[in-house]
Length: 87
Image (cartoon, rainbow, N blue to C red; front, side, top):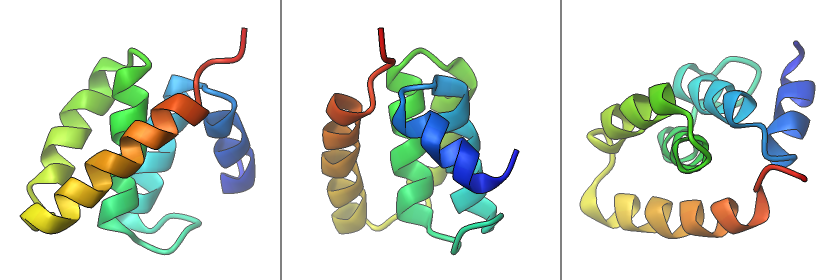
């Protein structure tokens, strides 16, 4: 699927799409490579129950400085509130 569709699904709370978006940011596939957003989207996906995303999140966390990791964790917390699965 085009990255715009993946992003839309991720924003609608689709945990698998959220994991894919995290990976897209990890490798810069269709988006500008961004370690922080790779962590954030993986973290959101993991919070929404995707086990694979939790593994990715922990891997991506190792690339971030403590300060950036703290920012990423705060942003992930906001995204978890915003991008819950729609009932």
